[in-house]
Image 1 (tube, one colour):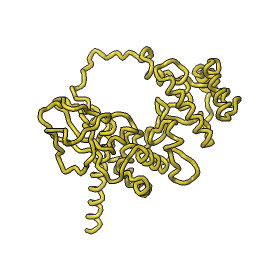
Image 2 (cartoon, helix red, strand yellow; image 1 turned 90 degrees about the vertical axis):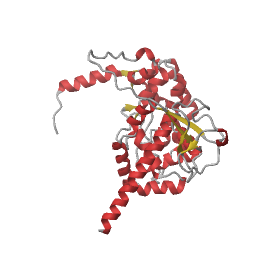
Image 3 (cartoon, one colour; image 1 turned 135 degrees about the horizontal axis):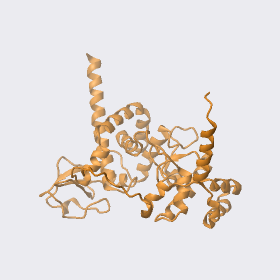
Image 4 (spheres, rainbow, N blue to C red; image 1 turned 120 degrees about the vertical axis):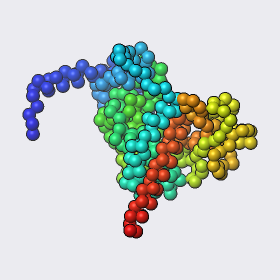
Length: 346
């Protein structure tokens, strides 16, 4: 065992002391502690100790407070990136071939669990895999921010979403109490999301499931995460073996007809001049999803299952990225299985 220099130890203690903040000095925090004690039977001494040594999360707060955002000075030789449409940028970021290939490996490694989730909730393996691939890069990046400190900072430092984060902090503490875990070491995203599927604490009680049947709900456990994501989709209205989306054709390069996005539904009979590029077996109303490329708009029909994906993240682009990544993973996965079968017969 190596000896740690005393100077390093003193430096670490000093930095830790400087970065810690006593939130019990705030009257609203004391009121919050009393609420948790009286309404949810928390130990007042333990909560007071927790809130007295909070590591202030300036970076997280800066996301929600414009004045704290750093001013980026570009170098003199800076060259602006090549012009792209908003979907071009989103696609390049989330649909890289490396993410697809990692998804294929993930489906192979967790095939049994993914198939079990499909049988129980009706959500295909590739869609669960795509969510995990986008949210945490298949578990490689589940977050580097201490969730308790982050949520406390965002709940009690002035910003535009105080009320939301105070609710999430409450849900987080209730979750750790139910699960019997220490809230301090848990790491997550810059907004307090946790685990492979990046669940916010408020999602745990009703949407997270103990899919490996060990008596615990752990979103950093692959089995629990897979089952929980499938359950989330099912509760959001996902229907087994239904279409998700199909690209459509229309006249022109820019679409300015009917309202687009997951908030609007249309009868297909009313969408004159728009037609799917392949057979589309879906009779209900559809959403028109517009993806802006540099020189044209890509247009899609989205179904009720597409809408279910937007319940995970309220973004048309996010839901379309999940759909397209899932399809790419499925295609590559099937190709690799076919190739293996051919080699096995030789």
